[in-house]
Amino acid sequence: MGITVGVLLQEKAIILKPLAEIFIRLLNMIIIPIIFATLIVGITSLGNIKTLGRLGSKTFIYYIITSLIAVIIGLTIINLFNPGKNADLIIDQSIIDTLPNTKMNLTTIIEQIIPKNFFKAIVEENMVSIIFFTIFFGMALNYLGKAGKPILDFVNALNEVILKITEWIMTLAPIGVFALIATLIGEMGLGTLRPLAIYMLSVIVALSIHLLIIIPIILYFFGKYSPKKFFVNFFPALATAFSTDSSIATLPVTIESLEKNIGVSNKVTSFVAPLGATINMDGTALYEAMAALFIAQAYNIQLTLTEQLIVALTAILASIGAAGIPSAGLITLIIVLQAVNLPLEGIGILLAVDRVLDMCRTTVNVAGDACGSIVIAKMEGERFK
Image (cartoon, rainbow, N blue to C red; front, side, top):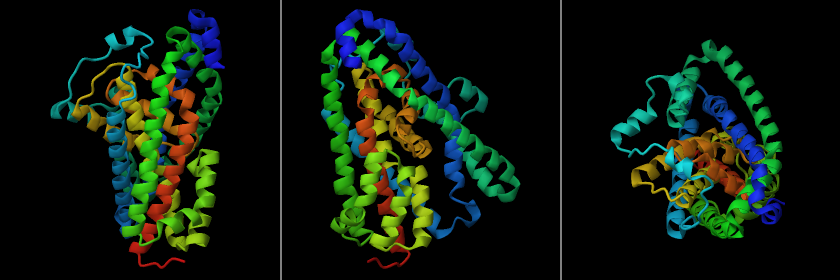
């Protein structure tokens, strides 16, 4: 509908821009509360730092390594395909003119990551600093145990409220997408969609590499489990992840497939699978890194190697904070964009194809959770069916 209206109205489609602006502002409004509440809930679910033990340590290390691999794949593919080159997607040149013209070095990275004033970081929307403080806050809550329980109960309740607000905002997504696409097509023409098709192909290729090559390698060498048997036995969960577009909604099927079809113990699945559905988002991390670079290419903004490393780090941290709900990765993409001063308006063109890509990346997320459960179980000496 957005494409059709954009073609029919052409420049007059600008009348829909306020609807697009409202949607973008709503997404921006919710992002800091999402970071604070969801990331703390994810960290505290690891358990007390002092008693985290062997299982938690192995699980967390696995999540970080696989997310890093996924991001490296995404950055490599997006730099090879370069889908945003000559995309001419700039909606408002003034957006570029207002961006800070600063280069990243070790000093500025430290200044950006470690805030002198947390509340100032919130006002300035310094997402990396906010994430850094939030991680420390969550670790401190874990360390305090019972003493920190009142605050943790509040944060858990706050997280539920934030997720409900997010759900409400995402119900407006069809209207927001319609307005964004109609405005974009009206101003730029149908030629805008060509680079978007290449972008979709790039993301799907990168996700496929992680799902069909990296995960099988990890399963075979570290989980000592047949990749073919994995895809057969775990197919119900993969199908559910693809159709529901939510790793949380898929969790019951994930646990059932791991325990009944593969033979992973309840001890492992009850810890690793729910934790993975909360903080292990290989597909989301990969997608956010690629989306950020695509937007930079489309706006003709050159990111240095250091800035791309910032994108990689932020994508991993943002994926940890992404809730296991549909399109959560799109919302946390704002964190990645702001980390390297990319315009949020670039998200508009991605919304048109986000549902399909979200289904694909959720499938990769769930497959990564299951692979982790198998690897951890094997390290614990378990035998499978």
